Length: 170
Image 1 (cartoon, rainbow, N blue to C red):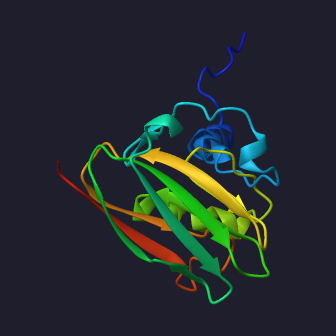
Image 2: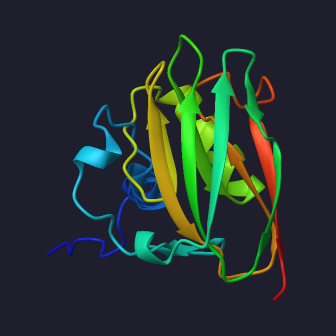
Image 3: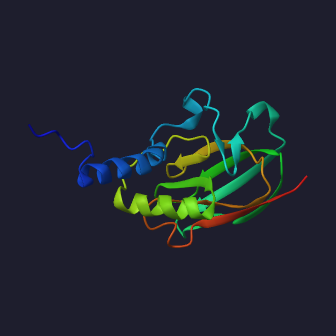
């Protein structure tokens, strides 16, 4: 009598590994909903901070996005521990977004977006903004370091639509 090999097939293992690797990216989905129409954002903790409490925002920063594939301003300095309300306006005629993260995370996510441009986003560190519209992100920067924000719509990040956030120690 033959017994079944208890090891999973190599192809199945590769598919499972790829699915587990890409599962966190499902959170980087593009939604057409307006954040202000959504309920409270879930608490998310990352390497670059955590969901901010709007009542504790200590600073408001306005960021404009344009079809020139640029953010204005494109560099920020924020004190560690600060909770920032970002007012993100799309002054262009095409969809843009602002996603906060490490440069490595943004590059990886931009690559996935090129392969899957219809993905939906709904995380507290992301704002997907229709032309002429404004969205908000409230984020607390808990760790010092250099972080970034970018537009991960396919081709936008690669065209230079990226900004830098320097979080300085208390």
